[in-house]
Image (cartoon, rainbow, N blue to C red; front, side, top):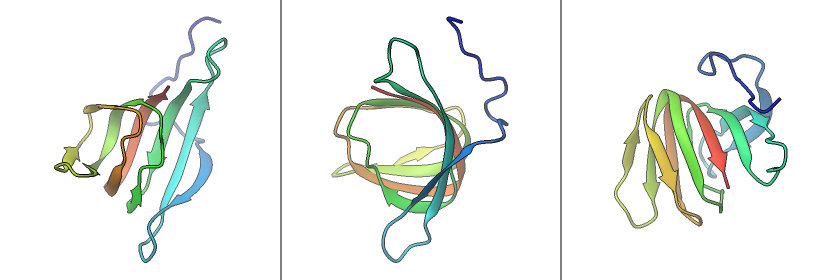
Length: 114
């Protein structure tokens, strides 16, 4: 099949447990999701990501596009002003973008890392 469909990704259940993320001395955020593989483009990481409230540093070194379906958060790129994020927002991260995530309300996003 050339097209993969995730129906109602904002309410998708059965996400896989991807562990925890957090900074020392903070309550760890719980991370879960579902990864989709595009045949012939296995190096591209894409799917649905969910994260509970918490604070952690961005660890992804590749470029990333993300579209938020639910939740509220702030991302502060190193040396730049904070970005307030809410449902419906789309972000484009250059490769090697580092910074701090502050998740205020469980977020859910569709992402593509390349």
